[in-house]
Picture 1 (cartoon, one colour):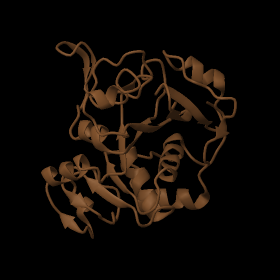
Picture 2 (cartoon, rainbow, N blue to C red):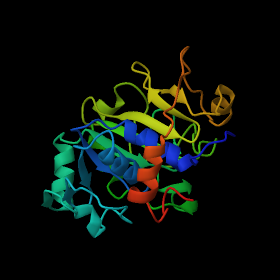
Picture 3 (tube, rainbow, N blue to C red):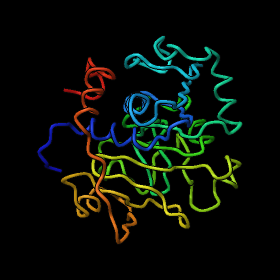
Picture 4 (cartoon, rainbow, N blue to C red):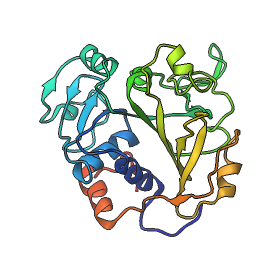
Length: 259
């Protein structure tokens, strides 16, 4: 994807992630770009969003980017400093509207892998693993996934390990597995596009293309066939104010959004 702009790819992804979060909703946030998107949403389109962190923070107003979900800044001006047990119990009880995670691999049903690349016992690469990601994917009403680098190595026919469940093997599979009824993957944000999931088949479906990306790019950078509708929109483009907030207030050290 080659297009001249005043923003980089990670800033584009962060802005599109922020726009997916509705005001007065609750969101269970992972580290990295999900955290950046949620902070941006809190400062722009969703000022009353209720943020939940795995380590026990409820409802913080985050001053600047934490380095992890257990950073003391995740508790700033929160309504409670509780426990991982309490946070996971809230999710299991159905009180979390959005889950927001990154991934190394994903298949057409939104199953994601952050555990290993290759065989589990003798992997090519060992990744950070689940943490609370399995709970987030299992119990959040709507799961948003960010995969910055969409390619045939990240969009795969079968993930090497299911760290966090999507729609498993298709319609009805989540319910059979005992996961929260009506929950599951909602949106996927990559370096090329934004996707949703077909209501009937639960397969990945294109929603919008980022500036400079094409349908050919989409097809060439996936092992599986992506549903492409007749009407495809253009993704949200960051404004100057979005970029100012990202660079000066959310991530001034550029730890996640980069230079």
